[in-house]
Image (cartoon, each protein chain N blue to C red):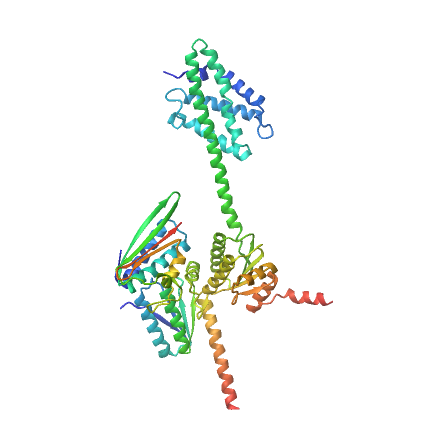
Length: 133
Length: 126
Length: 290
């Protein structure tokens, strides 16, 4: 069966969506990603949609689901590379994807994820230190 | 074009993309039209139990347009105003399909009879 | 058989030219400031020559035919250049119409003994020259419309100058009324430039926007949301007191939109956001204290 590949880069899972996804493919991606987060203990998910020409409310909902589910599994999601035309259309459609963090491209998304994962770790260390005291 | 499976949605999107490009719609106009088609085709599939879509190129004076008619023989919509409202859904969606699609096109028309089916016609002018 | 009008044109080319120029000069139709006499004479001579060629055979009242191609092309050039020189359509058409008098005079003189022929030929000549005159008006009009269309396009482009202020910061100063069509262009241009420049912060300055209605405010909010979806942030600066009042009265929700009173304020915010400082800032502050 057709699947969208999920790459692992350190603590980040990278997904590049390059095809016009049919609904089942999107649902499969959602399942695969959540399974992979648990399996690898990833701290971040980066979804690159720069080649995606259409995002309708269904795909938008899947993206939202992925973000929410990853948060529950202690991973941050960043969606990167949304095309201007897609962004304008989504806003017009009434979807502002409030729970999703965004970045212009993979590089900036990676920096964003790294920073927030580092921040998480600092908090952890501080907590550890206070415990030891 | 028939709308019978999720795979058909992809084909409808591709056809609408090709037609809009042929009419020299701008990229944003193309994207809006394709997204509207995707929403409506999914409605036809999910709520209308499948149906078909007709694509039509229009010419009125100097302006050109693209018209899409989605027809199904499903259960119909009892309260159209309610169905058009954002956030309302009878299925499991976000309730943005109909109302959202209406905002993406220039003309929007819906005819529905309970027990007989639904026809949604949308037009976008260049 | 050649037409009678053709015969007249061929027989008296120099006389017709002199008389035609006379009519134009005495009629006050020539505008010295706009056109040299020599140039006008040249144009008249060329037109007479082409008209002589065109009228040799066939139906004289149909100027769309192949025999008139050259004459039409000449008139088109003439009309376009005159439109650019600032002549009115009436003045351009008068160029043709003032040929009537000398031509009619010659017709009357030549066929004095045949009043029937004179009447007939004068009618044909009237139709012919009217059509040619109207043709120049049409071309004139078309030339103007092309200018207007080009200017509209240029204005739309001019009205959305997205400028890069700093590394990763772009600014869009908006001037004039924002209607929904223009806001659409503004939104698209801004988002496109964000992609091109990789800007993380966009400042929309509306100091030059006189009024904001509900629709415009909603468009601005949509632009801010779309920018966020793409992974950049948007600040709106330069909201005037009246506009602030209108926005509140209209009940538009600007929550979630960062606003600053001036471009400077917005720029400052953007720099802080990107953890950047301008070194000149310090010396400025120092001199301010001193």
